[in-house]
Image (cartoon, rainbow, N blue to C red; front, side):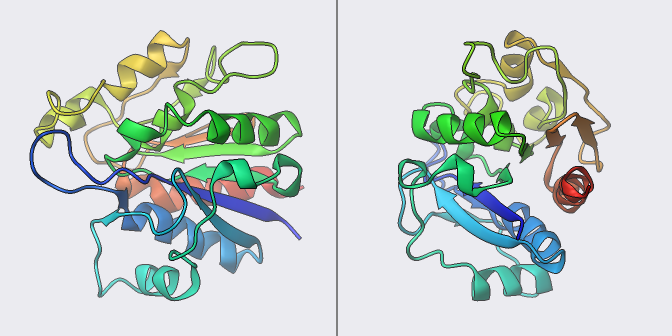
Length: 219
């Protein structure tokens, strides 16, 4: 059976704004729906383990209803507790919290690198590609170096008024690691597949990004 991990941030504070953040509900729920419908075994991992903070919940959304009913969010494990050989793909969900704790989680980066080097898929959507910023392969190179990617754009960050709040601009950091970032119009569905790396631009891209992952995983 194909096994997929969805990675979630554990960071709950939106800089010094006094506002809360976390993983963005739809960016985990939509992929969960796509992957479970495909017959995959899906698990959740978080930076700190336990119950991760969540943002953007829509109680009327059927995919979110399914996700919160089926995913064990009270007892998520950390990357250090998992073995890359057990998984065929990892999907970094976004939410602004990811900007603070995804890059510094060395265990999560190591897990994702292991999955990728075992022939698996690494995917991320919206701010989820923050997890790719410090993701190095065993030869020391950045996974995104020379790869075509999508991710939350500078224009979108400006549109939501958080350019001066986030610790860095995601598109700029991906580009600094050698990635070729492709921005589409603000908040439109944009997915880029480059081999076994699949990335989406924003919340509207979550389902499409997951579908693109299934396409790569299907022989």
